[in-house]
Length: 302
Image (tube, rainbow, N blue to C red; front, top):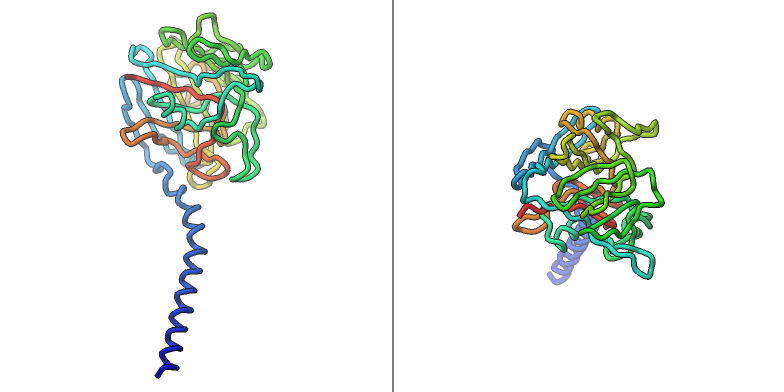
């Protein structure tokens, strides 16, 4: 009887060890899969976020599966205020401490935010080996001004264009790497893609990609923020610049500026439960993972 009981105990012990090993093997797979289930649904959505602030999620199946996230801002609303991440050149030659978009949103008490300027230095070797990480020093490429203080003059990219906000939050996108005297907020993108309602600067090397784009109407009374999700097969594969332009024209955009895209493209809002991602950023090939970037554009409405 004792021998039989011992055998049963050994069998049970072996079974539990197998179960434990299986759990240990499956857990990393489940953990890596969780972000895929946290992405926004592939369903159209329109929400009024605040006075003069409307968010729309657009689901495309052609030319490929892609999600567009569009924020339309009525600049005639006096409650709206904008902020570029404040920076200052320090002895190390850098201007900013890198932050994710949700970190910027919380630190500067903004209600909506997107990533903004191209930046350097940057590297992405593996999920655990990249630069900058949160808090690392970085520089915005092109012109940048926050609360009236210029911290990047844009002299090294004179052909880049810039979005500028004055004291009354009036906005204009200019084909130059600086803003007029007295600008309160401003930053550069690498190229105008729409000017006077017409396509500009299209490239033969254009490919589907995640994108961050800002655009204005002819009167400067409406601002659009467009985030295109990409690099995520069967969910959102991205658009080329040429594919983005008809959407901008359809909405009435007259001038549009391309900002930093790829794994940087992020749109976040503040909720009662904290910061929330409206899109599916993909930093280090992991969906719903934000990239720390040099600067951002934030919006408040109360």
